[in-house]
Image 1 (cartoon, rainbow, N blue to C red):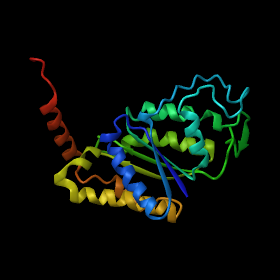
Image 2 (tube, helix red, strand yellow; image 1 turned 60 degrees about the vertical axis):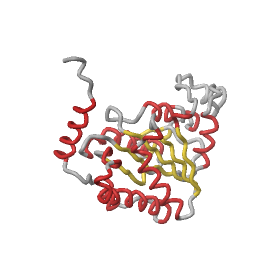
Image 3 (spheres, one colour; image 1 turned 60 degrees about the horizontal axis):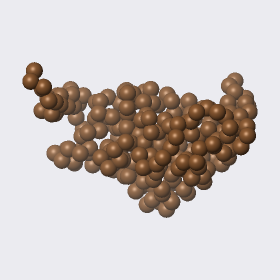
Image 4 (tube, rainbow, N blue to C red; image 1 turned 45 degrees about the horizontal axis):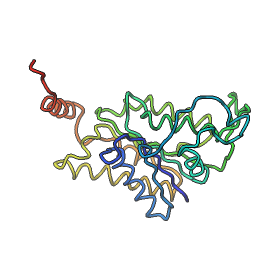
Length: 238
């Protein structure tokens, strides 16, 4: 099994999302999966300009000769596609959004009807599956709802099953040393999620719930966060 992880954090070396992703990948690797991680921050990827050349003149081939053609080959070859992004403005980062738009060559221009809905079929369908990983500083998991809806729509339109969501609120706590015992439960769950994806084909609701559970209450997270900001915001003489 080939697992391709796409990390959309603009700060990959300090990424809370990366912490969860790495534990997940360790779990998948322990079951024999072939792992590869793409750090979008390190890639040159032009914005899609909607010219549809990849649908008409050169089917399946984009006009841009940047890093994306190589990444498209990796997507085609993988069995599990892991999208990992911090929550920015209740959505994915612009890095990941750009990557998703540039997947356009992998889609056929024709419309096919599935159930009551028309969609564009995948050009290189092979039973690929998706996992979503995201973190945010806000204390409730409800803040991920917009991002979740986007990936649910991708699932419906692409018919690529979304087999797990690892959503971590109050993710700055992952680096707090005084909470490492409680944080360990979340990291162990992320590791277990990687095992389940390979051995069982999906992440269990039990594991998803463990990852979503913050070691502090929302009120405690808010109090701690506000104290941190108060100690770091420059007052500019006011």
